[in-house]
Image (cartoon, rainbow, N blue to C red; front, side, top):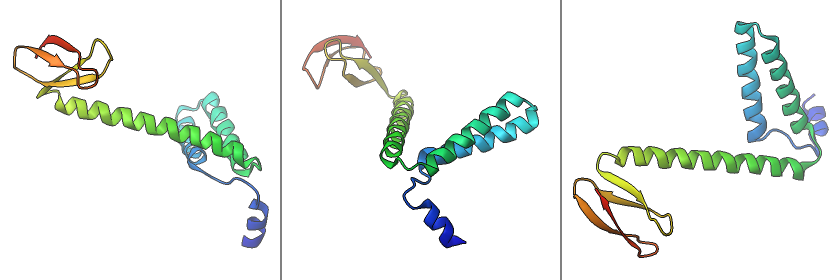
Length: 131
């Protein structure tokens, strides 16, 4: 039986990160539809399940890899934004953040120094702000 499945899956794409996420969302939506008794949520979960298996059984491997790579890029960017926001939130007690008026570079200065002249490390522009 195992050999038959292996032969069937030969030349097919299989499951990747995007497929795993869609299966997880399918499971969550099916559980939610059981409690909410909403046919629309159940229909969406079935469509998502079909899409996930369609991707896994597809023979167009290059197209599925491109889709997965786009998903991974979006996921990485969102995680990086979240980490940046979290880091800035932690530093907010000690520092103030200003955008350079010329180049848009974020500049971090210590709080409680009064009006100071800030020099942008990227373009060397000077601007005055209250810290």
